[in-house]
Length: 464
Ligand SMILES: Nc1ncnc2c1ncn2[C@@H]1O[C@H](COP(=O)(O)OP(=O)(O)OP(=O)(O)O)[C@@H](O)[C@H]1O
Ligand SMILES: [Mg+2]
Image (cartoon, helix red, strand yellow):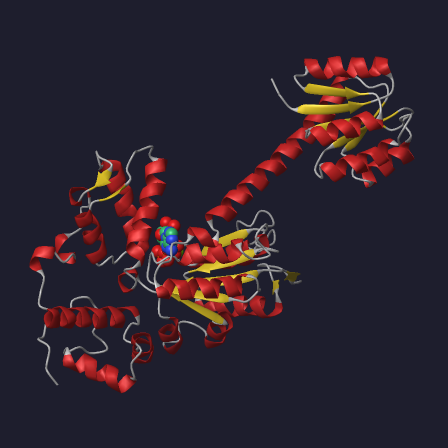
């Protein structure tokens, strides 16, 4: 049984009664009005899912009435009843925004089909709208946890670039939130209601890459049985997110560059380029500068995508974000798993704060989800945070400040070399030191730019 509400307007009392009976038997809730004035009055009081209007009413023209009803409810589907099957009237009705028309006399089947079609379309567009709102809410700026000054700076930049069509390249270690930021940019841009296509360049086999991205024409290669629309084309009017762009095959980088420059694509086997209107966002967890130097990534493409570079720092460099992120994930997963878990015991929070988080925010989220599922009480204790102990600093084993500072500095430099893959310019820039000072620091800890692996020889710090 449907409880959808239908407004029916006709000045013929017998037809009105008949329609009401038929529609009631189909399961609709019907409001029957004999005049345009009555109908407007009803529409002011309540929203309707559908309206059936007679073209000729004693006090109004059905089409004018439709326009007035649309002022209250823009998306109301309207079916116009025409007495003599007058085609020009029907055409005019459709032009003015009627969903359809029926010629009197009509049978139950025709009536039911017209209503079903209109309501299915309406339900679908409402569902799309609902999902869109949900997605936009999920990726609203408010849903990105950012307490640290570094993340505040990132979000300020995000807010600035979101409204534009600028190409943005988001860099950061794995799990730092690159995709979240890309979606936030899209959802806060004028393209928010259009598609967001995420392409993971590392996940597409090289042989399929071109056809996946640019599409192909039927018969362009063995197995191309029909035309295929590429991912870039599917992102038309929306945003294309090229994740792990550093993994894109060199041979296709030139073709992508042309797409970005000329805003057009050439499908495999095609002769005529197709115009596309896409905003490009890219992400990488690799050092693209190094890839350029090693000729694995085209320099011209590098500059094209780096119009606005956004860097997401690893979690260990923005520990102020940890408590808020932990609470955010706790609430999210407690709700999802229907568990009453409300917070963390102080030592559990301390453990979260001191962990190295090599997997960044994603690792933190997974850990919190697990602890929410496992915890038998409202407060999560250390027992339910199975973090590897050598990665945490136990409160009982605290070192003297100088030693702790040196250990931190050393680990920090190792991480920096690892992240920048030994690129001293970038490392010194991130550390906020001159190159010469940075070299001195490396020397102090017996580190070398090529010391990128986590297993760096444990030499004692020198005092120079
Ligand atoms: N600032 C944040 N606020 C809320 N959730 C976040 C934030 N940053 C990351 N997350 C969450 O952390 C997880 C990892 O984020 P995301 O997938 O965006 O990372 P990524 O940098 O793209 O990782 P990878 O390099 O592995 O692809 C996601 O579940 C995301 O919802
Ligand atoms: Mg990602």
